[in-house]
Image (cartoon, rainbow, N blue to C red):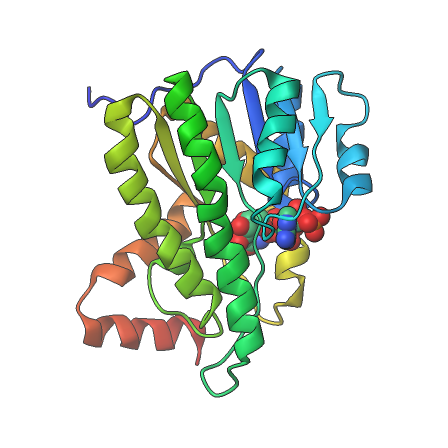
Length: 259
Ligand SMILES: NC(=O)c1ccc[n+]([C@@H]2O[C@H](COP(=O)([O-])OP(=O)(O)OC[C@H]3O[C@@H](n4cnc5c(N)ncnc54)[C@H](OP(=O)(O)O)[C@@H]3O)[C@@H](O)[C@H]2O)c1
């Protein structure tokens, strides 16, 4: 049998997880799934009240509210998380924004905000988390990107590029950190019904609920995958399209998106 790229996580009880982007959508559903499985979870995002609502009733849930775009806030957030958990077995970073955009309507303020939140904030997080995990000699990092990273798609002009950056970044992280005993996961979701996709006015193929997405992510951790992509069918089709010759890919994408 082929060895999984990360050590499979079969038992979550007592596992110490820091979930950044936990106040809604996929992050909130994943937080609940982890807590129900016995993990000790620190929930982070900007909206403290929202985090408290999700954490309510779980004795092993704590909330550390902060803005991931604030570089100064990360060391303090890590410190508070370590005070609660004592160490970190897994950090999941999923804070992001999505501004559907065509190439003829570029708003530079949106571009800057998207790259700052979706990409630069990952580096902000990594700059404090990687040294911590290396000092521990254990732990894992999961970054939520998107299957829109695979190939240029209509309206994903900004978002797709930020997520493509994360796909590249995660590979470098795995290359460097796996030999040092750390796990690295790249989570590439397809369409999930959350506040983020509420702006979409088109039919979203393979649309999942946040709970289904959380289940798919848990399965990925349990199987020790590096890339956790879902829904498998749609994600695999898009991944295949991304690899066919350019002429065929553009023709297929025009046909699929009717654009
Ligand atoms: N939904 C989809 O179809 C889909 C598809 C592919 C990938 N994804 C990815 O999955 C992840 C979760 O998306 P979602 O659909 O669940 O979206 P969502 O419901 O809008 O959740 C986004 C999360 O990010 C947090 N966040 C945003 N800005 C932040 C900031 N400056 N500081 C701290 N936290 C911040 C939000 O909390 P606060 O507002 O409280 O700060 C919220 O918890 C994202 O990375 C997204 O790109 C989603």
